[in-house]
Amino acid sequence: MSGPDSLDDLVAGLGGRPCLIAHVGATQDPLVAARAAAGFGEVVLAVGPEGGWTDAEVTTLTAAGAQAVSLGASVLRTEHAAVVLAAVVGAGLGRMSG
Image (cartoon, rainbow, N blue to C red; front, side, top):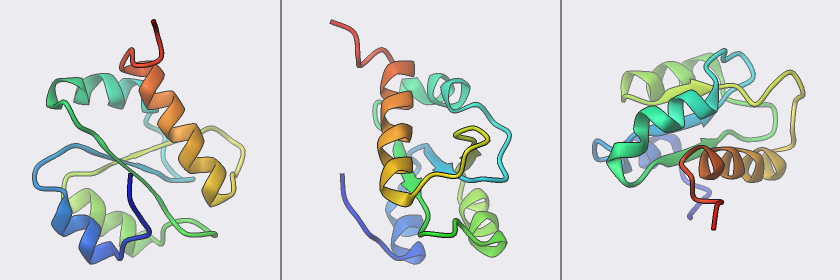
């Protein structure tokens, strides 16, 4: 876990790894995206600053291979979105079971 990083650092650090970004305008289910990325061994999770990602940032990230995922209808604070995204992805990948 790391951060905060600049957008350029995030994109440069992906190195072909799948990346899921929490985005208010997204419709992709994070569980579906996490399961699709499960074979990579490592998934990069990213949340934007307070106020969310800008359209330009989302475009840059998706052009680099990231997938924008929804955390539901509620808008969460950045620190809460990070925990929720990590928990959802961890559960989706089976990392929360004994």
